[in-house]
Image (cartoon, each protein chain N blue to C red):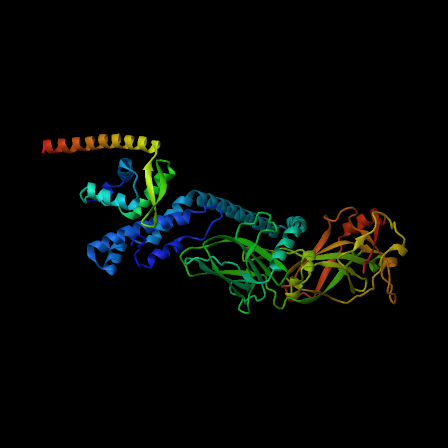
Amino acid sequence: MESWEPPVAWLDDLAAAFPRPRDDEPPELRARIVKELRDHLTCAYRRELVLCGDETDAERRVLEKFGDPRRIARKLWFDAMQEKIMSQRWMFACSSALSVACLAMVGFVWHGAQQSAEASRAMIASMQESNRQFVEQGRAFNALVLEKLNQPEHKAAPTALPDATRLKFRVVQGSAEGPPAPGCRVGIHSHMWKGGSSSDAMLYIGETGPDGIVDCGLMNPGPYEYFIFAPGGVYTSQQLYVRVGQPEQVETIACPAFENSRREIAFDVEWPDDLPDAQKNWGLYCEYQPTYVSVAGRIWVPFENKAAGAFGLLTENGFEDRSGRVLILPDGRLMPLPGDLKFRGKGPSDLSSATLPRIERVSSATLPLRGTKYTLRLYGVVPPDSLPPDGKSEFELKVVWFHPGSRNNVDSVEFDLANQEITKVPVKIPSDSLSRLRSAGLFSFSFGILN
Amino acid sequence: MDSRLLTGTVDTLILEIIGSAPTYGYEIVQTVQERSRGYFEITEGSLYPALHRLERQKLLEAFWKEVDGRDRKYYKLTPAGRSALAAKKKEWLKFSAGVNGILGASRGLA
């Protein structure tokens, strides 16, 4: 009789009344709340049983007077944790406001660029530079995230509580009304990204099915960060809050359309009219790379090509390398160049051709590309005597830079694969580029192409 | 009883009962009912949040004791709690004297 307890099931429910465990809560907080309420309910039950003599009646009377024990247990937990929770929510709100401000700023710059042709050129150049820097700075970030996504698919919310919410992502192409986007890799992170470390773990990693939907399973209410990698070679990340009191939360995300986005693109070089005919036989050395894409107000960022290549998962899932280097030959044929070119000098060829690595020449009329927007950066020309000769499998290239000493301030051409009418991109060489080229006196770099 | 009259006095009642001797939640509810002859009834939904708040304010100190094979949480007053109780009692006496004075004056004028 000494250890007697009322035979009521709701006493055992007390432990399940709390929200998901937090790292910053005192270790015995929950147990102490449960023990105190359990003792109270036991005392009340014994008293009522003595008064009425019937267990069912005693249970009913205790609950009528006490109310829902789980609600009180939850309130005691929230009261104890209130200061920490509010502090965290305040930080989350500040971070969200900052994100909105950043997006608004990007939108403002974009809008301004649309209004003025001159301004747009300068702004686009600026954005391209920002893009390049962003991609470079994000290399480590991408590598880390991709490494996490390379882990086997799993659902890591084993401690989901009864009030957890089933979280789903519905990814569509182009707009909310667009077709489903299968094959998107989705990762859920439990904390706001703070630069990351190898110890940070994804709570969930999965892939959208044919209907564009991925079920992340039960998630306890709170802030999370998600990453979505679309097969078009772009990714986005954002914070979300899993809300309380609903069985299911579906986030609809519109990604850049990638179906039917694989295109064969040719380039049509337009040399200045006043250029001597001999110089119109130059080759054109370019680098192409995808750019930011905005879909339904959300920015999608191309991920860095080396990171993509370094992780087999991406190529296996269609996340192929979408940037590269290409030599446009005088007859319009294209010669793709490998991405790991080693530049061999800073002035007129300082290496003998015998010391340069070699590669077999391959050319085609078109370049296979996939995705949406691209930038083609025009770096320099290749004189006729340096062009790959027909019938030989080995050669050396010399590139004369339009802008010696700078890889950032270069002329560029933008094109969008979403425009189905584009099959040949006009590449107009600015006259001032060639005037700089002449004044530079054919200052040249030499490089070999590695196998 | 209009439960709004009890608002603001729950802390004082809890401190007063615990001031007599260390006690626990269920006993506090029973004591309030007995001493007020059933006039006051503190619900558990307001009692425990108040107890935990007073504990966080360092006006109460809790300790655990095993009773009937179960752990029971007892509360006792801290020195700060004793000072707070004295201040609250003094404030209540002033308040009730003021209310009584007004009600008495009204009755006299009637």
